[in-house]
Length: 264
Length: 288
Image 1 (tube, one colour):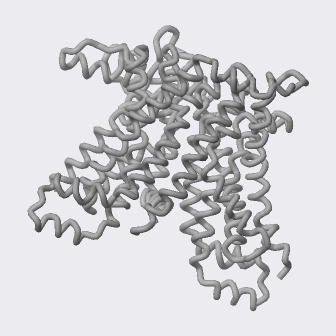
Image 2: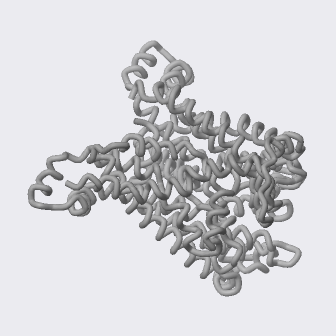
Image 3: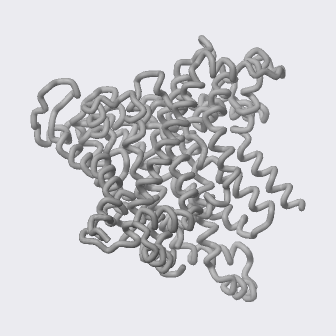
C-alpha cells in the first residue's frame, strides 16, 4: 500500500508541469501575476471566442478523424490482400509498403508541398489529409494479425457464395476488431499531434489545426509585453486534453500494440 | 475468383505511398541538382552546386554539430534512465501500473503543448525552474537565452517526453528474461546492483540495440520542440538539421539547397534504418 502511494506521488510529480498548466488555465491573469487565486473559465472563453480555438479544434477533429477512417480502410484492404492472396508482384509490393517504415518523413516535405500547390490543395482539408492517409505500419501490423485468423473461416464464407469484399467485411473485420481499433488509435493520436505538415500546408488561419494554432498563439504573445500564460495554458489544455482523455480510456490496448511492434 | 481482386485491394495504399512517399524521394534528388525559388518558371540544372553551397555554409555545419551533440548526449541519458526505471517497475503491482501510465502519458501528448508548458517552466521571470532555484537561494538562470542552457533544456524536455516509451519497451524486454537466471544469480549471493550489471544489462542488450537505433533516428528528426521553444536560437545554439531544412526550404524558399539537405539526411537515416533491420534485427529476435 505504501509503495502504491509512493508510486502515485512520483507519477504526479513527474506530470506536475502539465497538471499545473491545467490548473493555471483556470486562473485569472491578474491573480496569476499577483500570486492570488481566483477561479475563472474566462481563459477558455477567450481562447475559443477571440483566438479561434473553436475553429482549430474543429479542424483537428475533422483532419484526424478523416485520416483515421481513410487510413484504416486503405490499410485493412491492403492487409487482407497481402495476408490472403498470393499474386504476381505481391511480395514486392508488400516489401515496398514495409520499407516506408524506414523512410524518414522529412524527405517528402518539399515535394509534397509542390505537389499540393500544383493541385491547388494547399490551405484545404484535402491538403492536410491526403499525405497522411497511407500508413505502412498499420498495413503491416494488420496483415500479420489477419494471417493469424484461420483460413477455414474465409473458405466457409466463399462456399456460401460470398465475394472477397464480403469475406473481408463480414468475416475478417469483426475478428480483427481489436487490432483495427488499436491501429485506429495510433493513427488518430499521431495525426492529432502532427505539427510540421500542417505548419507547412496551411497559411490561412481558418485551416490551422490545434498544434499550429497553439504554436502561433504562443509566438504572437497576446499579452502585450508580458505573456498571458493563463490564456496560453487554456489553449494548450484544449490541445492536449482530448488525446489524454482518450489515452486514459484505452491505455492497455495501446501499450500492448506498441510493445507488439517492437519486441517479438 | 477474379485475378484482379488482390490488385484492386492494394491499389489505394500503393497509390498513396507512390505519390506521397516514393515519388518525392526521386523529386527531392532531382531538385537537389537544380536552382529554384519556387516561383520562377525556370529550374536550371546546377549539378552539385547546392551541395557545395551547403558544405560552405556556416549554419549547415552548426546544425550538424548541434544535432550530433544532441544525439550523443540525449540518447544515452534516455536509455540509461529508462532501463533503471523499467527495472524498478518490473513487478505487476498497482503502484507500478500507475507509475508506468504516468510516465508513458507524455509520449502520446501533443509535442507542441509540452513545448509550450516547458517554455513556462523555464521562463526567466515566472518559471517553475527559477522559482525552485530561488527557493534554495541560488540565482535565476536565463534558461532559453543562454546557448548552452537552451540546448540542455531541449534535451531535458525531449527526454521527459520520450522516456515512457523507452520504459515500456524495456519492460517488455526485461520480462522476456527467464527468472531462473535471476534466481541463480541471487543464490550465488549476488547483490542487487551486481545482478543488475551482470545479468540484466547483458541479457536486455537486444532491446537496448533496438531502442538505440530507434531513438537515434528519431533524435535526428527533432523539430516541434525546438521550433516552439527556441526557434533554433539563441544564435543557432539549438539549430538542428530538420529545423535548418524548414528554414532553407520554407522561409528562404531555396528549394534546391533544401532538397540537397533533405537528401543528405535521408541517406544517413536510411543507412541507420537498414543497419537496424539487417544487423540488429537478428539480434533482437534471437532470444524472444
